[in-house]
Length: 115
Image 1: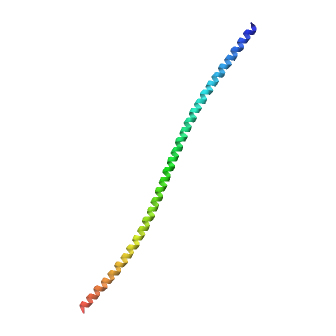
Image 2 (image 1 turned 135 degrees about the horizontal axis):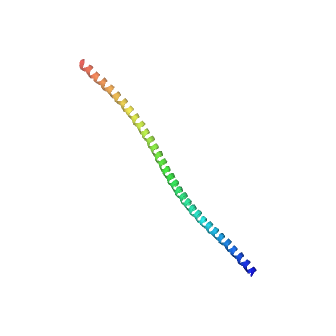
């Protein structure tokens, strides 16, 4: 009987130890689930940030393309303006030359009338 009582006590102690171990395991399981949940949130956030970086990069590239296009348009406009200014100078020179000829012609006509 004493042996049985000792055996019962041993079993009770082992049962308590197993209950503690089970509680520890449940707690650890809950912690693992919480860490997995947090990891999933971090992964989702990282994916969102990656998508945003990708969108920002696309926007940056589009903006750079627009800047390059605007710079090329400005260069083209400057070239056209330079050409137009050259044409204006040529026309002004031709106008001046024609005005000189007209003045000379008018003077010649007056001189002829005066004689």
